[in-house]
Image (cartoon, rainbow, N blue to C red; front, side):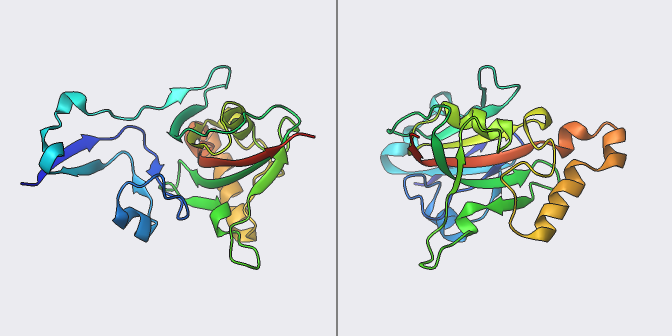
Length: 211
């Protein structure tokens, strides 16, 4: 007999399963559709047979934890890596899926969409500690291991401070939409900065190289 349980997942962000990652599967339909689902809505969990005895008391709801000395960056590890942990000065390669907390979680960029001539996604590379990317991403990867996947909620103070910080959407119109939202003077004057500048990233630490 099939049983249905409703679990309220915290945090107004989105669940995204990168299409090439098979170790993290919410369900086969999620993987095939590649859709983003709101974590603030109800998730349906089905069980039968031996799993039908799972009780509410045993249901673990994932929680975001604030990273130490991060300026308010909150993280949820979706997969723990088994490789090295990066150090300042290392060349880092990551895949990411970036969204705004505003505009209903609009996806402004994803490296999974940046393909080479063979159709493989191209990671984004940077030197850790160089200041090339927004602070929240540097903070997030410092405590990850290669192979790990982490979702982070980055507050405005650790996000985009200007229009030259990376990562940047390659599409001009996406860049314009991103920055006209984050740096909207009228809405900032109305005290909406905390919402406008909050960004959410799923980050996969692909590799690192010591210089």
